[in-house]
Length: 455
Image (cartoon, rainbow, N blue to C red; front, side):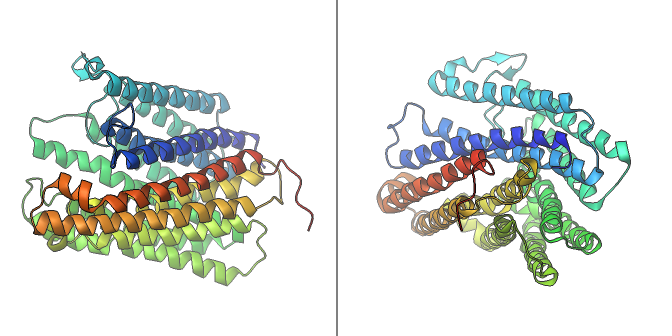
């Protein structure tokens, strides 16, 4: 480890992985509630909120930890303020804990979600961004402190790099895109119009910029690839992400009451969205092939390439198959959307953060060689399980589309009678995914701390 302040990344990684485990546990509970709605004390809506919000928060915390590591490395100096980073970490943990407790309290006692100063105390009720207004403000403050600390670190040495620029640009974009979710309009159409700016432009805009920057950083760190070449491809990828992703959000506007021109705008630009993701795959393979150096951290490289591949498959291919309006009018809001969401988040961001942990953690702990077998084991448990989860949900979505949208059967009949076996297999593979996560968490806490097995 070059810089002592890089240790702060471990705090964020720890919180992220623990929250990852919680997210998967509540996901399994949600899967079981598809078969037995009353089997748990909290209802499905509360569990689903916890599942999705935990996903978003742990990925953000992972990105913050990775950014603290990358910014100090690229700036070749210690973090501008370690106490400020620690304050920001604990403020985030306390705010997230309070929000989670609030969700649980509301799940048990819905009447506790009283109105205070014109906003709801525990849950705003807006899908995916349910956090109450006081938590929104704390999140904004936390992100501003984080960005301020990183920018001051960059300005300490004024050593500006392409990775820093794209990474911090993506994080600033991310912070700005949180703001459209903090005001209301009386029109449901307008409310949904702005709400999609938060939901879509986060994951298909700013987060992809962060992914491109971290991918370039990992390829350089693992393979020693030429920075100039990596930067060139990173700029091309990020340019295409913004070109296709910003207007690609039109595929969310098809059926909410916006003008009809969004049908062709959304359809055209959505169909182009897989291109930058395919470039990332090509970039990873090209760099790996051309450098041809011995890589001690094989699991780090393995996960980096896996992230690029599954980002393209999950976010690109699995998305584009049902974003054209001619297809989307039948599949909109079905389990096919859920399948796309699961594979996209796993490939684009879960594997990204896991790869960053395996690339940076050995350096932070000062080890050059470590037992990598558990890393592979965790990856395959999670990946095989996720592939089968996506297959089962996709199958359920196809049945749902045919029976509900074409034959006119009602939602409950299809869910309870025709898709039962899909829910059973999804729960089983969910447990398999949890096994992989637990192996990952255990490996995180012991990596580099035990002697290597005899060869």
